[in-house]
Structure formats: structure tokens, C-alpha cells
Figure 1: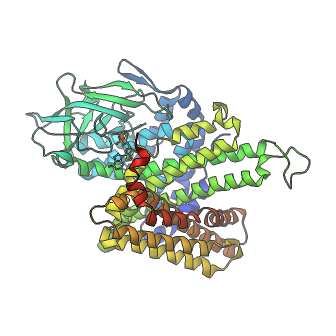
Figure 2 (figure 1 turned 30 degrees about the vertical axis):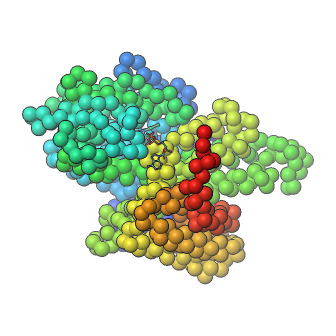
Figure 3 (figure 1 turned 60 degrees about the vertical axis):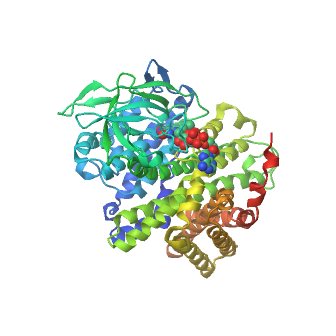
Length: 596
Ligand SMILES: Cc1cc2nc3c(=O)[nH]c(=O)nc-3n(C[C@H](O)[C@H](O)[C@H](O)COP(=O)(O)OP(=O)(O)OC[C@H]3O[C@@H](n4cnc5c(N)ncnc54)[C@H](O)[C@@H]3O)c2cc1C
């Protein structure tokens, strides 16, 4: 089963969840009018299906290989990367000053959805480059922009993100990589970074490393971290490539999944110090890196959506072919397993969870665009606060969903899911990293609860909850039998979130351990309710389209998916509320259970 890019679902979700059509009309997305969004997505779909998807298996089976500092990617990958650059795909969102198209996040989200679904390991490099471009555009000097941005935006010089060290992962306070000031205004970087995605490879002539390091006189902790551009090859004044910089890939990791993506140990400064150039101000590097990380968080969440979509397509095809047992409507057996209610339930769960995660991601992309494109400063600030609230959700919820859906995909394949031949297992192995990198899901939950819920004195989350209540009201008013009990289930779930939020806000004063103990169930509850409410908005849009244009199988499918989600999955909200409001002590007092 090869990957089929779900363009029409993506366009419909962009319009109904991210406000694309409304944004074209009110000018926010003027650049996507005249069918530009659809044309771009159709072209991106062709790239996904024809170039990336055929290389997914070879990436998994052959993987990236390290030899004495060089990394060779899987057969066919360098050529696919050349096609990615030639197609201008890296330049979608970069600024026009340096050759970019300045297109919005929502369009990038649609493209990433399909490209990751076709070949997630391939896309990890370009995803980081999109974020690095944003970081340099926001924080770098004109000279740095002049030297690097055009080549990064074209994709010729992709970027990496270097935070992690052996002693510094979730906690960057102990970060040890050092930066010394040089007399010419540059810096000399020395230290070791681990787990660096695409830190070294054979697909390009130069790589732009964005590296966090500490100056000798820096304050301790994260207030003393600076950000540097450290190119693999130094760049001459005329833009040509000069000497090899003092940076080397000391090895790559052997991993559970994403074998095609080299995960590199990088050493800086073995021969006196790698030349680095400061981005932004000294000791303000983490704030600069956050520009990159925030973009990367949404892009990482989209990987969960994409894996869910690909695993669902795979399982659906298998369930139509595999014959076992008799089904009520199947006639003389054996019948295709898709006719068994339990298999149907698994398939519907895969689809509904994936679409809920997609809804959360596209909603977040639309809000990010509004935070950058709205004219009114107060409206822009409100959108920025909302984007802050939604970003940890858009990373962590889809990351978990991608894993759950991939696991269900293996289950639907029975024993054939557990052997590698069918490809179902690769989705599960590839998905497992998504909740770990770009800030673990646990760290996202803590960010949501401790930093995002208190935004505007709790006003931002309250506005969010009010909006979701309004969607439940619209569903009730639409009064269509096809919605089943969706309106009641959604209203109950939003109420549960409302009460759980009040509980969490109450407990955020020090010591916050009670809130921290329930941060992950709270994020799950918020994800389910936000996903369910946005799916309901999608279903309402489908309902309106049917009223205007007559019945249509795709629209009926959207309504049925939202209804399944509300009646079968959103019902977990009540249990999560009970966990959040009543279980913290069982975590905090449970030392005996973990005693060794
Ligand atoms: C394939 C791969 C690619 C990667 N790519 C990159 C890259 O390109 N650039 C880069 O810089 N890094 C990269 N990473 C590193 C990745 O971001 C880290 O692995 C991740 O941030 C977690 O850090 P850690 O591994 O040190 O885990 P730890 O920080 O040791 O965490 C272990 C566990 O403890 C939990 N935990 C830790 N601190 C807390 C806390 N305060 N409260 C509650 N729970 C806590 C975590 O949630 C986790 O479950 C990559 C990693 C992998 C495996």
C-alpha cells in the first residue's frame, strides 16, 4: 500500500479549522487566493507520493551510515533532496528579501502533513531548516542574514539545532559547550553535542549549525546561554565556500526508528575551536532558539498526524483484503476483516484520533498566522497568547495520537503487523520518537500547566473554553440526526475541562507539585476536548456544504468521523477530570510503590 496524500481532507480542514477561506476574504491570507493554496498542495502531494514515499522503506532498511566522520544517506535520498531544493519547497515560508515566498504557516502545515506521511525521516532535516530560517530572520545581524539566509531558504545549506549534550537534555542549565570571544568579533566554540538530527550527511555542500554555548563570564543557568551560527564550511567574503570549520561528526546513533535520519554526535573545537558567529545578544540565546523550537513543536506534532494518516491508510487497505471468519453482511466466508465490528471500531478510532490531531495542528497554525498577520495590535496580541497556549498541545497531543494510531494499525494486521514485511511496524517504530524530542511530552504538559494556563490571569484558557462551548451550542442548534449525541457529549466534555482548569489554576501557587502530578492527564483532556470541538466545527462546515450543495459522501464522512469521536472517544473526558481533581496525592504519596 503506497501513501496517498489526502489533499481534499487537508483543504477542507484548512478552511474549517484554520480559517483559510475566511482569511482569504478578510485579507489575512490574500497571498493564498485564486486557488494558490490548492495548486501548491496538489504539487506538494505529487512530490510526497512520487518522490518521498517510494524512498521510505529503503530509508528504514538501509538507513544512514557513518564512516570516519562522513555520513552516507540511503540510496536515492540525495537525489530526492536535490528535487526538494529544485522544487523550491524549502523557500515556502522564508522572507522575500532572501528569496523566500513568505507563505503562511497553515500552508506549510498542509505540505508537512503530506511530506511526513510519505517519509517522516527524510523531512526531519527540512523541518529544522524552516525553524532556523525563522530564528535568523528574527534575531540575526544583517551581515549574518546576508551570508546565510538565501542559501538556507533555497535549501542548499540546511540547518541543524544543537541544544542537547550528555548532561543537558530537558534541563539546559548544566549546558557546558563553551564560546570564547575572538579578536575579529567571531567566537571559538568547543564542546560536544549529542542527538543532532542531520548533523552530518552527503546531500548538500554545506550545513549551518545553530549551536547553544556559554561564554566564560556568562551568568550560571539558562540566563547565560548564547546562540551561534557555526557553518560546516566557512564562507568567503564573495559567498564561496572556504576552509572546513573545526566541527566533526563523531558517530551516529543506532535507533528504534527513523533510520534514514542520521542522529549525530557532534564535536566542536577538537583543533582549537570552531568559528562561530553570535545570533542576537550574548546570554540571550535561549530566547532566540525558542523562535526555532516553537516552530519545530508544531511541525513535530504534525509528524504524529502524518504517521496516523499513513498507518490508517495502510490498515484500511489490509482490512479490505485480509479474509477471516464470517461477518453479518459478508455472505459465505471467509469475509474481509473490515466487516467485523471490532475491526471497524479500530479503524474508526484510528481515523477519528488522527483527524482530531490534525484539527488541533491546523487550528494552531491558523492562530500563529493571525498572531503575525493581523493589522490590529490588540488582536495580534490576543492571537499570540492563544498560539502560546496551543503550542504545547499541538506538539504533545498529536505525538501521542500518532503512537496510539500506529499501534492500532499493527493490531489490525494481526501477526503480520509484528513482522516487518507489511510496513505497519515501521510506522510504530518511527512514531516512538515524536513524544520524546522537541521537549518531551511531559515537559510540554508542565509548560501548558505552569506557564500557559496562567496567561492573562487565566483569561486565555477561559476564552478558549467559551469558544468550545459555543461550538457545542451550534451543533445543538443545527439539530441534524447525523450528529447523533455529539452536541451533548461535547458540552459535557467542555464542562469537564472547565472544572479541571479551575482546579489546576487554584493549585498553581507554590508548591505546585499537585498540579505537576496531573499535568499530563490535563494536557490529554485539553487535547481531546480541543480536538473534539474543532472536529465538530469541521462537521458543521460539512453540514452547511450539504445543505447548500446536496448530499456528498466526503461531507457525510466528515460528519460521521466527528460523531464517532464525540460518542466513543470524548467520553473519556469525565474520567480524566476525576483523575485530575482527585489523584495527585496517590502520585505524590506513592513512594512505597516505587521503592526498590
Ligand atoms: C532521534 C533523536 C533526534 C534528536 N534530535 C535533536 C536535535 O536535532 N537537536 C537537539 O538539540 N536535540 C535532539 N534530540 C534530543 C532530544 O530533544 C532529547 O532527547 C529530549 O529533549 C529529552 O532529553 P533527554 O534525552 O536528556 O531526556 P531527560 O531530560 O533525561 O528526560 C528523561 C525523562 O525524564 C522526564 N523529565 C526530565 N526533566 C523533567 C522535569 N523537570 N519534570 C518532569 N519530567 C522530567 C522527561 O520527560 C523524560 O521522560 C534528539 C533525540 C533523539 C532521540
